[in-house]
Image (tube, rainbow, N blue to C red; front, side, top):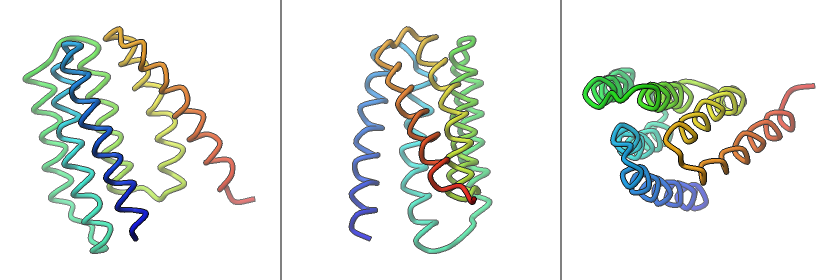
Length: 143
């Protein structure tokens, strides 16, 4: 359990730096979506520990993503970050770990396209996430 808390803490710290980076790159839609994701991670952690489904909370998070998309729309980058955030929400909320690996890997391709669309060349590191998801998926697939 302590290991999960450390992973959550590190993920939350990473989200804070991502939010700051996106804001500095003038991607307000990205910064807002990742702020929502910050709170999503906390809620998903509580949901998992309590073994609850909480569909209403899922709807609230999706509504927040839609609101951010509509109010901060700025073309393709806004659409890409909205799409990847929405797919990530579905993954975290409803999918099994193995399905999360597969869908997360595909979703990372679109997140990489988002990073490129806002000219965040450091975002190319997302290639490692794609590879990690692929290797993890292959390692844990049923034979």
